[in-house]
Length: 403
Ligand SMILES: [Zn+2]
Image (cartoon, rainbow, N blue to C red; front, side, top):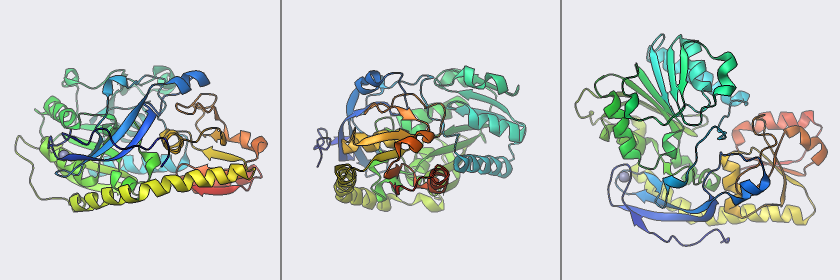
């Protein structure tokens, strides 16, 4: 058990999704940075960023997992926030196929689309270009400078959090991708969205979040960080939809089963039908996954601490490929810092910036030609082919490990 691992200081809470009081804590990681996507101009700022403890609780009634210690007042979402994954061909291929699938299946060509939490707007722009749709994206981290040169005239952005004041925006479908996991009061948030579009029954809701079932099953502690206060399984997300007046229509996993895709529609003022979709019945499986995670996670943490320490003790140079939240969580959970000599990322928006937590400077992968790593740790195995090919092009053949 590292210094970062300690016993939970609060053991139970009310579930922010279903409001049950049966939410019990099962995992704590102490003193981690409260933001992991925010990038900094100096190492000192990155190291000095506020830290808090994370305490995960599991709701026995709806299967939802949340940081029961979460303090939303400390979060910062601004245009310095860099969540974009748009530089990877593998990720772009996923987005393209998702857009074609949603446009085709739900006949959304030419329709009005609102995106809540649109980030830098890449998805909405591509969606509207492909489908000839009218798009409005809402996000406090939207950066007008980045898109202005190439912004289609049928797409506009609002730099703000979504709230009931946007209820009157034209909207045939509302989409929310990789946003709900950043929201603490999930039940209230979904109810607010439902109430905002409530007078237009049939409006589609297209949702995407990471799958916490996989994170727990795989002991993926690098996927657990302060910015993600809410962790869904397919079933807990669908139950939240039903509870807040949406009828789930389609529920599936994609991106190597890392992401949950849920499409629902505003139920016509009636309670949603109780017929569950195939992936919905997962309450017992989630309970098991939580138990498995509690039992195996300490050993997984120790295994990585040893692997990196042994390598550096033997004089080997260790690099990490991928500087996003997973990397911040990986290093801050392990309590590992300067043993990792170099962190690279293919996103040009990250180069030269400093990562919260350890304060590493994020480099262009090209620097590895000079750094000559003996070991490269990939923060997502889905990019193995891309990373192997890039290393080969640089004439490098380090030991390649994936979390
Ligand atoms: Zn619950």
